[in-house]
Length: 258
Ligand SMILES: [Fe+2]
Ligand SMILES: [Fe+2]
Image (tube, rainbow, N blue to C red):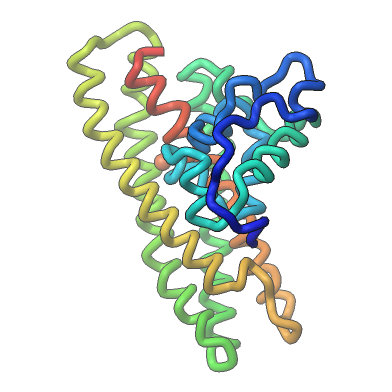
């Protein structure tokens, strides 16, 4: 999707009529230099705008808004206006991860995201296999989706196990006041590995989106085919929230001792 393609020129968006009418104004310190990860950390509902525009706010969360808009040919002022409009609408469905303690956040991620994946990956495994077998001759991209999924799913399961067995327990200890600089430094190395794995998972999700035309089934698709695309779209949404909470909230706060 392209919105008024032109390079970013305006630096600050705070003070737009919509933003200045609000009190308190969550956009007051926002500029196009603010990273997308920080934007979502401050107001998780903003993820919806980024999802709609295909902007990666989890693995790519460290990039400033100006940079991601430029890469996608989007007008940053328009994107900020969309974010501002959302800020006036509270969304109870999204969790404010930044308001949670580290232990609480680990528990939330395990139940809302790891639990979701443990239920959903076997279902998607079945559907990717079945739909590729039945419709792969008519739509060869289904075979490619299946190939990518067979690598993506077991790697993701191994990644979750590492987090649950090795990383989250150390974060809980740090949250309980145990551990100091040395523990945090050794945690940093482990976290870098996890972030690299998040990028690989993000690449696979981007490929799913591309290979499914943005999760749009063809006219002739049967119900299982449609259910697969719907399931992959939900997987992407859940994973973006999941990785955002780890990359932009849990990990930096654990390393900072906050
Ligand atoms: Fe995780
Ligand atoms: Fe993770």
